[in-house]
Length: 403
Image (cartoon, rainbow, N blue to C red; front, side, top):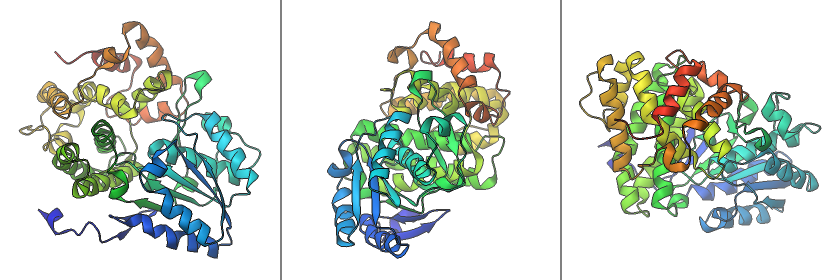
């Protein structure tokens, strides 16, 4: 296989809208990034991250050394939690203003990177709030330079213009997308991901799979997104078992990180639809729910719904995890059960009922899917007509295993 000829320690520059330093040891590229920031006249940086992984992963020590060596002033906001809130973003903005930050470095998974993008936009545009940003009241055209140091192989946020933050009092978890949110640089270093637990490894990789299932089947889907979708699922199917079996397998981490990165580019081109639009209400209502788990619980029911409309694409896309599909609408149930079996084989068997949801919650979730700013725009990209009744059926079907 072509992957066998790759030197995973040969750090490459992969250029999307972002320059991504990719490979084992890529964290050392922070030296050249800091040098570039210095050349732009920037002398103060805010790091936005979670509680501890930025240190335990090994990411922070090279960053601190590079900033200190260049004489930068810096501060760390480490209050980002999974499914971050607008209040956390505001706290980080306040800290950034106190040091007159000229750039923002996000260190972590999707939560830290999305929060960091939001902070970069608000620091560049004083007078606006995070609630304005996520309710549609403010649409930024500029942001401070943002550097994404990615610690998981699932988000794709290091290569695209999207960010997600929750407005907790409304149970809203909107998506924003602005060109100014593209990171200028990103670092994908598989060695920084070796500390992910088997559970985290499963769930972040399932996030990447969902990204391409949606991107390749949306109304905006193009051959580029389909091509990246095929490669993403093939790589996850091949390397996820190896990473679960041996968390320190850097070759497996390398190709899972690559899969997640190209999945991020795929949905930057073709957007997302049902699975993400329906998951966001779940983790807005239950902030402790992992985004990847929410997606996994919904995916089989979404496949069952959209397969007849995109049978040929999905048969090709899902071949590594559900072999033998012919690409005909009549096999929708077979495809959905096959995806559910693959998720179970990966160790993810939970359904919505296992996480405390029931039939009485469904109407509320449906309302959130349609009322949350931006989610209706995702629903409009679905390949089937996104009626309230259809969304309700997907939620109800996801309460338990498929029959």
